[in-house]
Image 1 (cartoon, rainbow, N blue to C red):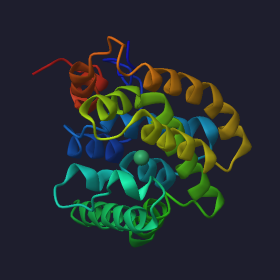
Image 2: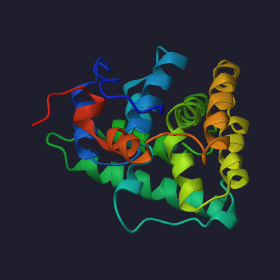
Image 3: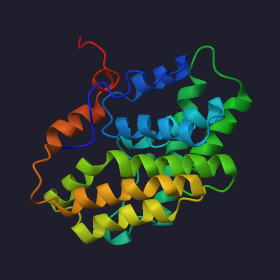
Amino acid sequence: MGSAAAGRYANAGLSPIEADAVEWLDGFYQLEHLLCARMWVMKLCPEASAEVKLATLVHDAERHFPGGPTSTPSDGFDDPDYLFAHSIRSADIVEKWLCERSPAPDEGYIRRVRRLVLRHEIGGNWEADFVQAADSLSFLETSDWLTVEWVRSGRYTVEQAREKLDYSVERIRPSLALTAALPLFESALQALESAHDTDIDVKCQREIASSRSLLLGLARE
Ligand SMILES: [Fe+2]
């Protein structure tokens, strides 16, 4: 068992800039989380703008690059010091990546993507609320192996990891997203509670979840 499945995003229909972003973040252990979040934002909001989709796809980018803020289990998952530092660093890294493209997207596009990445943990307007909700739904759907890894490695207890699941649901604002979250929460909780006696292959799940070629179903080079 485990949520990460090779080829799951073969039909993701990525735009050229989205495809480049996935290549940029290849190897990131949360690459599947990002692809799944983009899928959710499109489900929740079929008219989502290009900026909303890209921001959702790269919202956690900073975690792929060493030197980011760290949180300790005792701070909880809603620690504003961590969440703000994480969001600002992601927005900075994404903005730099966009500015370095040739040709660079226009300033307005870059500013809108930056603002959505900055708001992905807190929401605050309807577009940002959808980005935040998609982040939550994706975490609930794709992070069973990660929460099991947390517990098995001793980083968090089952109770502490459960707080992350609770927090992911509680912060959702659009009612459509909340309805979608409940069954995902149930399965995520089940996976977490059986962390010590499930046969989930965490190493293999992490490998799939990090790999652009596996997630997109591309032939291995
Ligand atoms: Fe996220």
